Image (cartoon, rainbow, N blue to C red):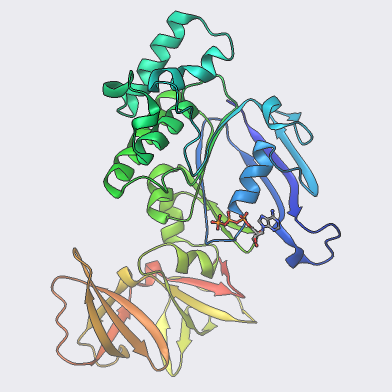
Length: 356
Ligand code: ATP
């Protein structure tokens, strides 16, 4: 296990990058704490795999340095970095049994037979492969093969880090849920530094201690699931995390009052004078329908039942506003009023959250 330090790390696939947009990864400084489970989360093309491949050594960065426990590994090849990797699709030997596949990374490093047996059993138990240890891999389904790949990634205890690149893509939904929990359990027991790339927020939020939200090559926030929900650092994080995401409304701020159209929304704290693009963020969970005729007037366009809750798709003037309905909320008319929980309001200046 290792602490991984990135200093001014940036990467462009162009030979002569001369603009910010030429970088698939914009300059990043970060220290990945030893033993923490991280998820890299963001939409397709935001730079997750680029960052992962820089850490694994599959790519050499255009700029900056990567240190493992203080040692510069920037120019070291993958094999010299002592990491385990699990990719999107199975990387296993079809002609070997499941046991032989799991043993391979340990045998390769000259581990003792007794230790290999014990360790393979532990991993097989952890991810439910114990019933098929003596089956040939060739006859198994794609998702079981991917499970074996995961096992191969988890089997070495001495690695600096384990890197996962969308490892559950080919796994069926039920097994996906189970495996996610099992990987988390393995992390708890072994305490490896784990970095897990995904574009699925549920996967990221359940797996990771810290989630790194990326957008257009930039890291916008590194935080726990709770922080991402309560205090998104950027409007994109607010919008991307949550289902539906945060409502973002244009306002102006006068100390502890946000002015939205001709309506005043009381805030929980005072803000200094803000200029530029100012917005108020409020999650749909914290918008409540009220009978108060002086509250914010909205028009409800439709109500969607998504199983364990309902979402009202509403509008304040031309601005969309989602509301997660309470059981007791009755929509009697398409025009109604809402209030915001003022403790849950975030204020943004040019897309970045500002502290009161
Ligand atoms: P996905 O979730 O779709 O895998 P991602 O977040 O992992 O996306 P990357 O694969 O890191 O994103 O890509 C980041 C940017 O770099 C994208 O604009 C992509 O088109 C570009 N890119 C990735 N690989 C290469 C390459 N080998 N050559 C040129 N451009 C590339």
